[in-house]
Image (cartoon, rainbow, N blue to C red; front, side, top):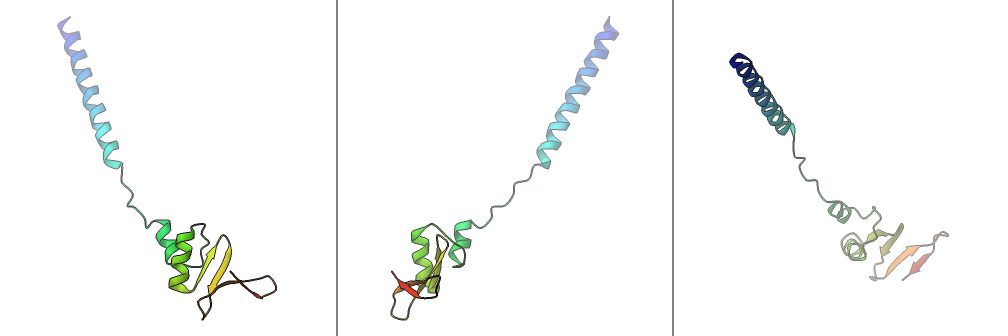
Length: 94
């Protein structure tokens, strides 16, 4: 009886050790992906990306003199007037 309980004890100890090692190795494999530049920053520096954000649109118009807003490209004229081009190519001032 003593031998059986001793064997069971070692088996349980081995399983506990194995389970503990397995959890540690899986925790070490977990990597944290570094944060990327937020998409808003990418949009801020590229006026050719369409945005729905009115404030960002105004910033890009001031900075680049053009910006895409809801799929339509707007421009700033030399008189600081905002316009877009119609399908016929005419300037439509806002």
